[in-house]
Length: 372
Image (cartoon, rainbow, N blue to C red; front, side):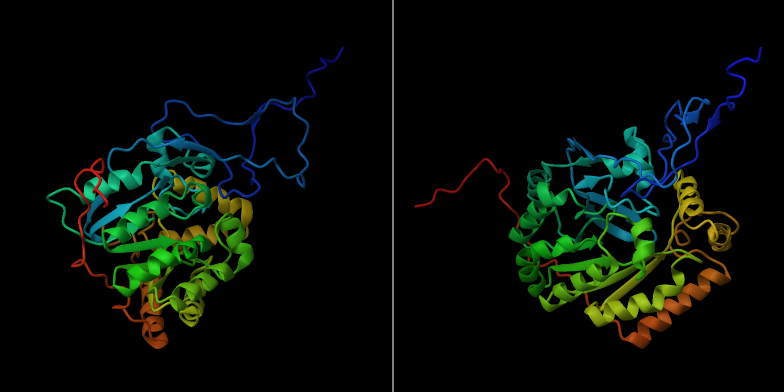
């Protein structure tokens, strides 16, 4: 008599699958975790319908009880930089995001957890005010959103970014914003008066003009046309706008660089910058999975071209090379950018910010002035 279980297939690891509204196709364990979870079919599962959408993954919010909010970054290829990140993790779900590996420090996956387990800093405005009031504090431009987007979807309800801007506006502190969200126009009432004093500028990240590519590569970010419209609205309000054509991914979107720059200039951007895709740590595997899932016909070509810009590797963390790469392909991309920059008419001085108007807040927030 034949064993009733003998016809079942042996255990096998389930392939990565796209999730509705999310960028990553898996949730690999972080590099600091002792154990790794893998989805496996032991032969008892019925074959999944390839056309059936998986249920939407829900976003979970966690309070980040940070004690400081201003990050002081001294990097040879960035210079001395100050930043504030109201959120850790990002619902936009951009598959290429270099910040993904930072979620591993928190015990989360750099894949789907990065998009669904979001930490927020509700006390950031109060802490910022205290840091700005320190006797030894000297003003320098602060960048909002240098790691994860300060205008990601949860900002609509939490409004932490807006509260931070209110503190910076009150103290006349210079501010630069990086975002790919149209939500930034909500705060024009704060940003426009700051910009009129030379205290604010906005950088809009625009990776592609192809809405289909954007939908899979950065699923919850604003559509390309929406970002161009955002540039237009900000520019008309007198706020300096710079386009970040970043990241450029060889063989996937780098052929769009010139068109992105021209479309952004036409929308009102007067500054421009670009970076090459960066794939540190676990991001290499996540990005390869995404390529094989969404653009399998181009996957090997894209990876080959990326390796050509990093001396045979998918990433080189060396300062001076990590952002632009090296080799003939990287040099060609760099030349294209600078030729387009001059031909289109961008102005590198457009977003220079002042630091001489700073007004320190009172040293102790618990002390209120007496109104008569």
